Image 1: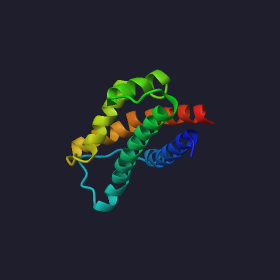
Image 2 (image 1 turned 180 degrees about the vertical axis):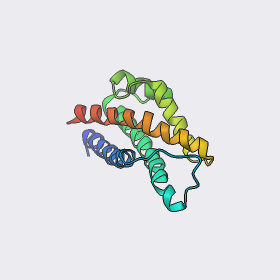
Image 3 (image 1 turned 45 degrees about the vertical axis):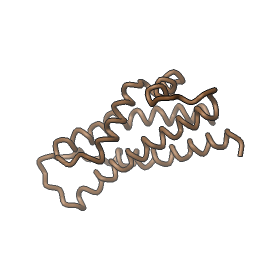
Image 4 (image 1 turned 30 degrees about the vertical axis):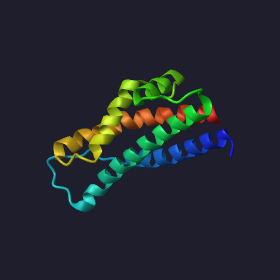
Length: 143
């Protein structure tokens, strides 16, 4: 397999994971920290969180694949990777992606309703718009 199909496959996986995240975000009802949700009522929020995690990881895999296929060397640090993706125009701001990484790390550890509210707001208000831009730019560059 040549390198370009690897990049195309990585983009397709990114698009698939983002389609699921966007579906969750488009039907998202804001979380109410004062409400006692049943397990069934929590399912859409859990799906949003899980889909965010998968999308974030798919984006990183796409970035690494891009580096391997199109760049002369791989970034040594996460920050270097983000700076390169910012320079290439895939992401709007490397600091925003550092915040997204922090959100990813918090998803697995947040259980307090007030924290969950901020997490879901971050996913829908920060991550989703950033991912929409990423997939549009990546698709345009590879198709």
